[in-house]
Image 1 (spheres, rainbow, N blue to C red):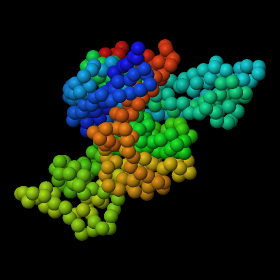
Image 2 (image 1 turned 45 degrees about the vertical axis):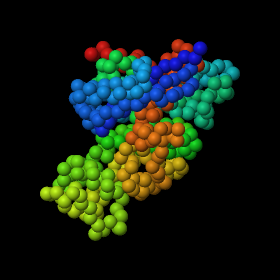
Image 3 (image 1 turned 135 degrees about the vertical axis):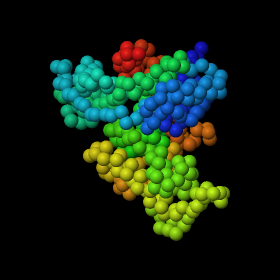
Image 4 (image 1 turned 90 degrees about the horizontal axis):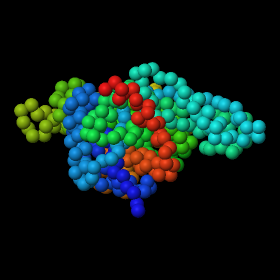
Amino acid sequence: MSKSKIIAGIEIGTAKIAVLVGEVRDGNSLNIIGFGESSSRGVMKGVVYDFKQAGEATHAAIHAAEKQAGAHIEGVYLAQTGAHIDGFYNEAAVSVSSASNLVGADDIRRVCEGAKAKALPEDRTVVHHIRRPFRLDGRMVPDPEYLEGAKLEVGYWVVHGSVKEVGDAIRIVNGFSLHVDDIILSSLASGVMVAGDDEMRNGVLVIDVGCGATDFVFYRDGYVVKTGTLPVGGDHITNDLGLGLRVARRQAETLKINAGKAVLDPADKGKKIWLNGDLSIGDRQIPREAINKIAHARVEELFELVKKKLGESFTARNAAAGIILTGGAARLAGMAESAENVFGVAARVGENPSWVTKQLRGLEYSTVLGLLNYGLKNEGDQREAPGRAKSGGLLRRMTRIFDRT
């Protein structure tokens, strides 16, 4: 008889809470059966600041998703973002232990443990250990076991976050009597939805521009090279428009959507747009050029910050597949052109897969879709290798969080 499990991807964002429910059958197929969404409250820049409000909004989205699915969620894959997220690279090397110089499983275990052994401060917890390719006597190999060599090396990109911030998000989900199977970095979730395997091999940077935060992941040779999160997003363009044009936030958001551009367009010179468009008291015309100067400056600054965080790991030469933009704010006109100007490589606005329903085609859903993708892979790993620890071992590495509650 076939076995199934009901899993959910949950993204607790600054603008929205999104919950996507899927049924995994036999660990190798996934059907999306439910979706719930609510306006976010108590969350700023991807981080919970009001536990009660964030909990109520999240629970509303979970309830809607379960109702549509007609099933109870059995496991949750939870997105993680926010300025508290950071990362570093650490590597290790071992001498191959066998007399024949054939790499064995114990050599692989020792080098991996060594590369993951760097301790974190008490207030930090590992979110992901992301392995880079193995190197055997200096040459890159995907799987060194049974190969001949003297020196085995490996490195990990270690993503870590604040114990408190990660714990708050987990406790919100636990408050609905749900079990968090794993936490997934938002950029990794959205990255697998908009970037293909060939692009990851050739070198591609995925930038997910959300409402309150921007997440990025850089792939090369099919591996994650670097990730990062900035507490800047589409919301900041709206705020700057409100301050610069002296308009209400709601009006600034409308101007951004209807007239905003991330690049300066000479064709906009002399053109104006009505603030409200209803000739009401206070309605006035706003120069398009003024709108776009503000939007252009903020977007360019955002991409410059991403470029700075990438440092020497990113060059035009090792990013042959260019840049892919996703996230709700990626829809702003001229975003790809602005990214090209800053990074010096081709850029495009991404697309979610063609099999996704129209309701979920929007780029603001790339992350929650990617969470289910990770969930499917995780359930498949369990089926193929019973008893094997999940990637990272969430509950094991987060013991400190639950001990303190």
